[in-house]
Image (tube, rainbow, N blue to C red):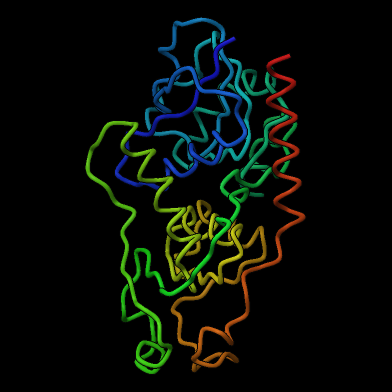
Length: 273
């Protein structure tokens, strides 16, 4: 049986971070397939961890019958709900549906389909063996999200990063996604970000992480794991000193990480059996 992984035709490298996260748990990848064209697959029978934000091309759902989906970390955006609902029988055939957030769990259950909160495979990254944190990374954030006192008195480098990328081949995107997560793991003393697929890997790696993104259904996983959402990062206005060493560490999610790994790997093994 073939093993597929998702390819994302977007300008957000966070999508590719999700694929890299899933690939950690696959024995191999035989081919990549675009999320919005799963209906076009005509190769050998294949499994696919069907994770992430769905769906952009509404007319292309459901996927090909040649694909055996493993729904894990699945999120249904509002505009796609009527399409997904019309094909509830497809989901029923492949239940249980592991969902990224409770809102998607509730929606899938409302269709009479078994669903549960799987969270996201991006919570399974491990920190590199050698960690030498020397920088604060502002990921889709900027200096206005830090107080002047904090900017100037922590003794660390300030680095601004964007997860927006131009159109590039899949292998280039995946390599960049791996490298950026490894860089955070080695060098980040603190992450300030509006991107959930930056925040989740960094929390998993034990990096102090401040999420300042908007509150939406898409970003609900932040609350699901207990990470406090902030509108801005102003340590002076909170019970934290302005030195990074005094900022509370990232959430203790070792138990969550272990459960996600066990769940995803057991579902992959069952699908391949």
